[in-house]
Image (cartoon, rainbow over all chains, first blue to last red; front, side):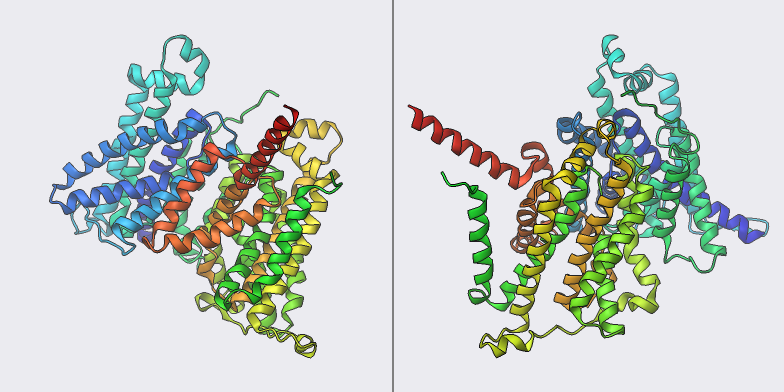
Length: 293
Length: 327
């Protein structure tokens, strides 16, 4: 039972990472009908920026928030310069452009920082936290906490600020939004910025566990895909719930189902994605999209 | 004016040059061209699916891997001649592709891209997992085939590299001929109409479900043949060479060469084979960056790739010539 609880909590910890990245994917999908295949690599790059700042002697939380700001600006710039020209192009063109971004980020990170793994510090104490017999990793708990705070902030932002309302409107109905004076193009760019920011949080939080290297986020991204698919690509709540479920299931399956272990991690995600898409393509929380022909 | 199109003469010239290459190039260069042909076959397969039929696959490396391992296991375990592995790889991949294409029918554009992307990431893991068959991360070492004694008999001794080159070229020509015939007629029009408007296609009596999953199968079969040829040519297979990069490189080749173009497969293959070579001089990571930049730039400015660009250039030249002869 103790082991079970510990595994659930550590599952929730990795689940919170998947949730953050899945939310980033869903936000962009909601606003522009694009799945950003470079989301994970953008997060990886942001984590490297954070590493550089820390390496230059910045205090942890200073570097953390500076990286979030850089990631946000970077996300906005990428939307404005690279995605905008293909905004109305066929899906294939957009997918290819984001794949191009993925390749560029990955190889530029390899170029600048070399492919060797770098240890990444955690802001949380090393000693595990004990509740009676049960032991939790402090970083796991901290990771869940940080992600929850970020999610709460973003919820409040979308729910209670005029800018958040404008962004939701722009995503839901661009034409009418434009008529009431919302600058839809900029709202989309802000969405990309926020998504990049989530990615950065996910990257910085996961790096102490995975070690930093240019391929660090590929595995996380495939799980985030699975999370977003499970929760439904049209539902932010679904992305978060999906992320947590995927994280817990991944951990429990890894612990209790012997033949899967860690060697088939990606395959489990692949199977999950295909099963959900075939059985219930709109996911647990998504609405099914009816297209007019 | 002769009745034949200029592209016919270009093709005859290209095949003639291709046949002469073994006597002009070193074995190392020749091997690179063998690789180009292998890539071209895989690209043609992917192009049928993505370019002609509009189904996005980011995971064709998986079928390349299946083809390669079918060939490797047949040669290593059962000591079957390498020539026989090619058709078997084609059939196995045809079935695998068809089966993967069935659930893919329900997946529209983006979701298919998602599923195939995950497939591309999962392949090396799956290959390592079935260690008993695949030799795990060690891979399988094969022996390079010798040229048949027949050639020495007629006074034309070929070394293994030259023989492999001709063998690959022959497979390439056969598969291209088949593809051109397939795509030029009814089937090709059906595929394109499904891509452009699948409801209209259905209304004109095309069985879209069957066509789409069959296209997936045929496309996988082409890519599988390429995989088998590459296992034979390199004489070695290992899980980590069939990673996400391979799948993405195939996509890059299709886009740069030209979507929905048969000749584009050759240009794309030349690109993914030779550009990394000179880019590597700058930095080990440079080829990736250059690939990415090219990919985005081509989508912006040359969405139909090199083949589309050449076609436009040719049309422009014809117009200009006609214009000057009128005045």
